[in-house]
Image: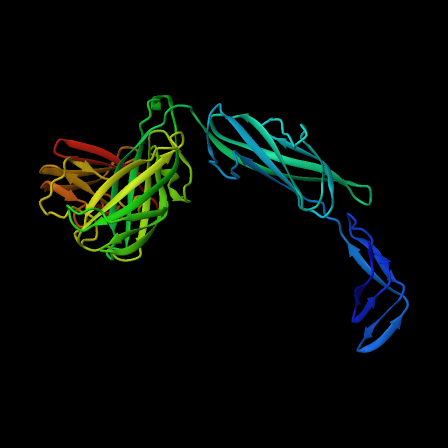
Length: 448
């Protein structure tokens, strides 16, 4: 390369050269090179220095490097589950290969562990040449398999050093997808329970989703793509609900007495098909799969306290793979009583049916509440068993009149201890709720 002027620094001596000189190209290993100028002038310790020649020693390095990013159906799915697809459908994979080094690479071979044919634009899986900082996108197609799948895209070539030694330049990237059986999936959201904190600025609860597909008996899995809670408020029983907005699956706003109140929600996985070992916090719109049922927990924070009168309606909604145009919803109206939980406003209100709700909190440590509703007067008893079926504790609530028992002060309370007063170990437990002729069992888990 020819340069008419440059500044050369060597110790504290600075020369500015005006004559033409040559710069040696970069090498694949640190190589000592000299740059010489035929004439110039500069300063040294503040004094003018004239020189006809000056030589500087520099070390120049060549670094070959490559990057590949594999995507499945346009999604860079580095972690499971990845995008949902229908088994047997045609999939498209893309491989973006980028030269991240400072030398030109040649004959880059792109492959996939799935065994599909990769096309880099000329019908082959070879990129003939790739300059530094540039990229080429290759593609491949194949048939989707059932279940969780992962395959690896790889790009590799060789580079010859100045010493004539050949080095391998390579990179790889994993990509996931989940193949579901073809069919007509369907779900039902069955319940929504919500409990407020004492300040009425936070509510937590759980909603249950079941697989209602006709092919459920064949092991038909549901691909749950999104889930969310929307809140609305109204002043009286005959009033319409005030406008609300769901900005995203984790945030929204509602109007309470003409004042806008915003909220933000987080979600957690409680159990999948009764397996509580999978309980964890969920990232936003994280894909999930289940066969029988799934329980999603939530906590929502409000920017202002909810008033102690009026009605709050929560709507749980979910979207599943294979039903892109349909949203499944379930709404529950919670009259506000000014207590630490949501419950019917009228003291003599009677539920249409007897039922027991999922315990709250769940998972829990050390204690929990079990809300329930009675459509008629009944003697209420709850028996708690461990996974072996052994009776751990009996909560005899005695004779209870018909009504709602959703508040902490009214719901059944378990302190996490056995009949001897000892704290029980972490694990899965079952509670058998009995009220008159009604009986139901639910699971809960202690995490310590």
